[in-house]
Structure formats: C-alpha cells, structure tokens
Length: 305
Image (cartoon, rainbow, N blue to C red; front, side, top):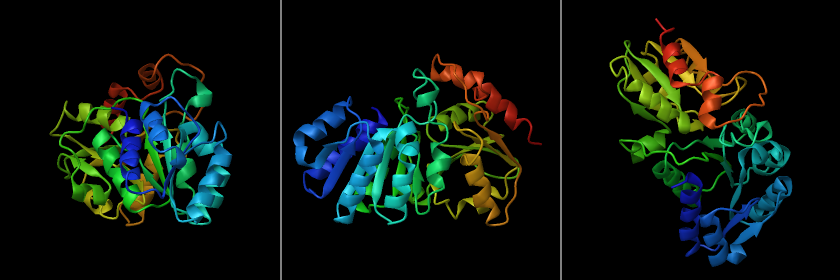
C-alpha cells in the first residue's frame, strides 16, 4: 500500500466520529482520496492547482478550531506556498498538517520541475514546524494517529513508491523517541542515518557487514530527538544518507542536533550534488548516476577509520 493511501484511510476512519476534520487537496487521482470525498463531501475541499490559496483556506479553517490536513505534490506544496505556510502555520502557530507526496526523486519520470530535493531544508527553516519522513505504512499510520489526536504544524514527507515494511516494526516507545536503531552502537560501529526510502537502502548495506555497520531510521527529524546524541557519542563515525541537495539537508540536521550537546563524531554526508540536473529515466537510474547507489554509500563507510 502507498503511504498516501494509508494516511488518508486513517483520516477517513476518524471522520466517522469527528466532523471537525477537513481535508484539502490540490490533486485528484488517488483511490483513497476518492473514498474520502464520496463519503464526506462536506469535509473535502478540492482547491485545484492553487497551493498558495489552499494554505490560506487551511489557516482559516484552523482558526475556527478544526483539524486541517492539506495534500499536494511535494515540490509544489513545499516551495510554491512557503510564504503561506510561514504566515499561517508558522507565525500564527496553527495546527495544519501538510501531506507532501513524491519527496526526493519520487517523480523521476517528470523531470527537474518535479524533483523535490530542497523541501526538507525549506520547511525545516520555518519556526515551529515538525517534520516526519515515514519509512513504511505502519509508521505512516502511527504518524496519522498522532496528528489526529494532537494536531500541530507538521510536514509529513510521503514517498511515491510502495516501500517494504520494516522488520522489526517500530514500537510505541521508539515512536515517542522519533527514531529506531537497527543493531548496536559502540566504538566499533559505523552508523548509517537516513529515513524514508533511503533507510531501506541503508539496511540492505548493513546486512553485508552487520558487525561493522548499524542503522538509524530518523523518521522524526524536527524536533531533533534529545536522547540520540548521547547514544551516538560512542560510535566510530556516521554516514548520513539523504535524497536531498547539500544545503540544510538531513546531515545538517544531525550535525546541529549533535553539536548542541557538544558531541562531534566524524560525519560523512551522502546526498545529491549541489546542482540542477535534467536527466530522467527512473529513480534508481538517477540515484546511481548522482552518487547514491548502494556501492557509493558502502564506499563512504570505508572512509571512516
């Protein structure tokens, strides 16, 4: 199941008993979206390709005490409407939940206008935002439950692909912490940190050398988990893997979180290059071409000694 459909299904279920929920969309084309619209037409607003106006409508609904979810493609909901996000959800501290689909190179077949390689940095810069990047459907549902129970200004980065389930699944306590550790962390271990689609690539790499490598799925990157720096203080080094360009990406987030507690392990970043590129041909093709293949990541771990 797609993460988008899983999240929308949870909203649809809650609408059975809570009519103070509104779902705003700039897009059609999802089966789960059709079900929500047909069952609860008074709680669904199709705003068209007008993400800026959609965020303003969301702000008005939130000011009236409603739980508001907005949904659109990642490159447009993050960048086109960033001023409205700042002035509504940010400045007025409104509990608007933004569902962003197709993060990173998710729309690899659509070209550079549809690549979402800066959304993380843009939304992270807005005061008061919380950022989640789920790695499977189970985690997506947990995030949906949190947003329905305790609405807040949040940016949920959903993948366009069907991602496999993590094993073992994230527990309730791990969810509260904001991350899951795969393997042990000690002075002999190099830790791969990522989220979303890329954590699955990291876990496959870990299997090649489990005695040397551990992984962390940092699914809630903002606010940064307070308990994580101390756990990372004993590791041999860190490789942060992110399907974003360098400025303000997940590696920046990790470094800032560690430095606040005066913890400075060796950190290597594996991300997309600082450039616009015009190739398409599939997501894996692009990842391989621009330095995020499994072999590229594995080679990065060898630079930590």
